Amino acid sequence: MKKVITYTATIYCGLRDGYGEEINSSYPDVINDYINNRSGGLCVTCTSTTFYYNGGQEPGIIVGIINYPRYPFSDEKIRRLAFELAEELMIKCKQYRVSIVFPEETILLENKEKIEQDGTIEKWKEWNKLSKSIKNRT
Image 1 (cartoon, rainbow, N blue to C red):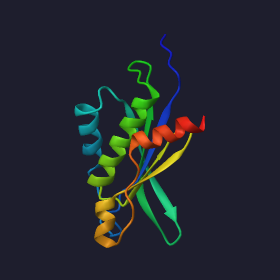
Image 2 (cartoon, rainbow, N blue to C red):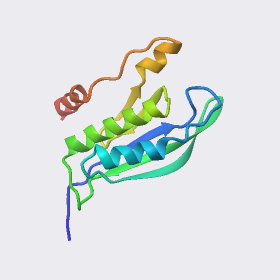
Image 3 (cartoon, rainbow, N blue to C red):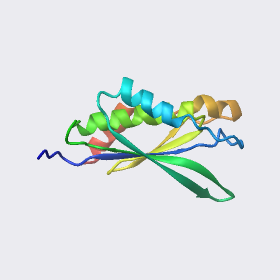
Image 4 (cartoon, helix red, strand yellow):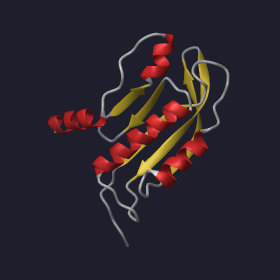
């Protein structure tokens, strides 16, 4: 039996191309490419969902990440990998925003380049800055 400290990350990503009607279906390839070529052994789940919001709804995915005992990672590495995968999904699925839920906080990533095509908004903070702010609170 193998045991590790529990740490999770959950990524929420819509699939509507921007705010248009086209549904982006590239996420399986994005996830597979990241897992097989860049993650160093990360194992994730991917569940289809529907996001309901004021004035509409949108198909999406929920990507779950755990500290899998067979291939354990530090909390910091899970956070980094979650940010990398979320950013990859956001860009390749043509999303304005993607959320990542950690045990201690929820982060909203914003696609500055895509948003700047339609307006302006500041870029999401880098992982190291976020990590330091979390450590300072404890």
